[in-house]
Length: 114
Image (cartoon, rainbow, N blue to C red):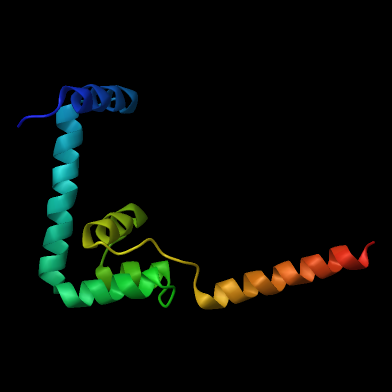
């Protein structure tokens, strides 16, 4: 494997801060990518992509998405989304509406306190 010397220097610095080696970082990244690829292959790409898309757009909760995909770690969910090219999630619609309502209520409280 060949790496640009600036990239290698930066990778060594990151590895040192994390208490590992560049080889360890590469190994970990490859293991994660292979696991993600295996998950997509085993589950059928369309089902995985649909679950990820629904989670990304706020139609499915984090817990439901993780259950559907059979994963227990949120980091794995985010890695799977990244590997599949799915954007990070937005706040579910019901939660957004509740947040907006609460903010408007708080602003009204501020207005009334003048």
